[in-house]
Amino acid sequence: MSQTTPAMDPSTATPYGTLPPASLPAQRKPLSLPRLLEMRTRGEKIAMLTSYDATFAAVADAAGVECILVGDSLGMVCQGLPSTVGVSLDTMCYHVASVSRGLHRAQGTAWLIGDLPFGTYQESKEQALRSASALMQAGAHMVKLEGGGWTAETTRFLVERGIPVCAHLGLTPQTVHALGGYRVQGRSDEGAATMKRHAHELEDAGAALLVLEMVPAALSTELTHELTSCATIGIGAGNGTAGQVLVLHDMLGVNLGKMPKFVRNFMQEAGGVKEAMQAYVAAVKNGSFPDNAAHAW
Ligand code: KIV
Image 1 (cartoon, rainbow, N blue to C red):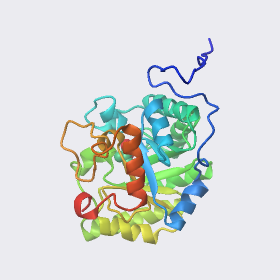
Image 2 (cartoon, rainbow, N blue to C red):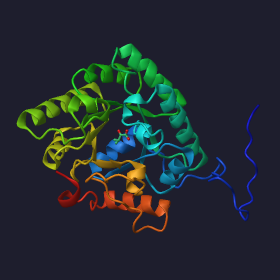
Image 3 (tube, helix red, strand yellow):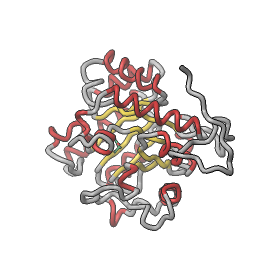
């Protein structure tokens, strides 16, 4: 049975975060890979946030967030798992599809990235292609995978087959058990050299974006200048990266634990969620977030 959208009278309150009709005119040009890379070249910072459902994604889009990441952090944020390791591909597809619908009911201009969860790309390039295809068919524009070294070959395989790839180095939560905890990465000379080598290999393989998580600010700034066709997106990596990402619930202050050092609660001074997101976008763009003295190593 097909689902129809009830006609909306603008003077009547609408329930459950109802989204506007799909015909809403877009307030900005849709984001695309060339546009993101052009922003990087121009020096305009890229604002990314995670979202896991239709309503928050639509509000983020309307607030000017350029990239929405359906991160496997949803395992911890939405499912109450102790880490991201238990997230399945089906769960990721469910949330990517929800976010994609939300975006298309609003402006539909944000660039949508879906995380490849643990165990769905490590076995072989072919397994990675099957998993990435499922995320793309659910509505993702790009997939993200964690780690360096062996991931370069997988990245090339996906990019050659038309799947844009966002890489992820530094603290890679899917390997938290191997790393021994949520710790800053790349502090030693050897660690920094390895991360640089991995970043260049991933760029050569065609990764267009690179998340750097919990990486010393000096190292991520150096990497941002060294890479020429890949835009760095920092989380706990200082203000020298081409863009920033935060987990939505963290930046809204919806976290009962101790907030990581790299998070700023944008809800504290905002009148609502959309205003908090707008303040985040503005702070990323004008370089006031992150503040290296407070949020970085
Ligand atoms: O899963 C996620 O949300 C992420 C971000 C923290 C970068 O990978």
